[in-house]
Length: 286
Image (cartoon, rainbow, N blue to C red):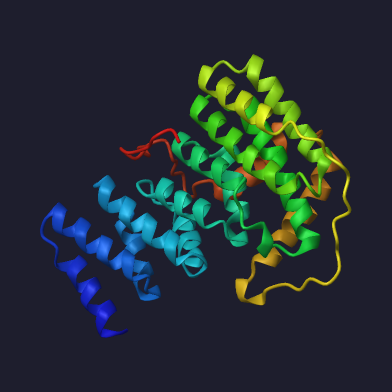
């Protein structure tokens, strides 16, 4: 560990007031040091939204190196910092977090978690997926987000899923026009059928902005190699591909039972649950 990282981490540990802690975390986050990942994740449990937000921003800036630690933290499933870890994972958009976000968006008990995950599903770093797995992941993300806009009881979650669909549509419009039209149809449906005026208005904006002429294109399959620096995420997506094939033999598209296995992958262990989780104080509609 360098002298710089040691001094910055020590400043966090020595802080004796909320203001000092927030400033120390902001300085640590700004340094973008991989050595700071464990302490930034520990800060996610802090009760101060400003301090926690600074830690989340630091993890987002670090990007891919922070993903394994975030996934490990989510696996341990603490009740106080899950939403912050999901937010960081959603903003980073690393393929290794795809399955976690998919399950959280469709099946998590906490509204803030579902909301963050739904937004993140549409903003994945798709360029890091190998082409043969990118298609199946994008289709699964689309179907999950449509499911959320149709079934989630919280308007904030449906709003975020609408934003996620819009981002996804911008990515696939040139290569998957049929999927893009399916998303457009969902936007049109939301403009008249959703219970929330905010969701209806946002869907109408998306529908109007994306009424474009789509021409079928062939997605090139050759000439791409996988980035092995991304770790074991390809194996995770292979499991997704296999599971999706099995589910389609049994359940219809959009059937919520298709997501039970996803719920199980992020479900609490040993009888704990997420119901006690509080939404962050600065949780705002964007």
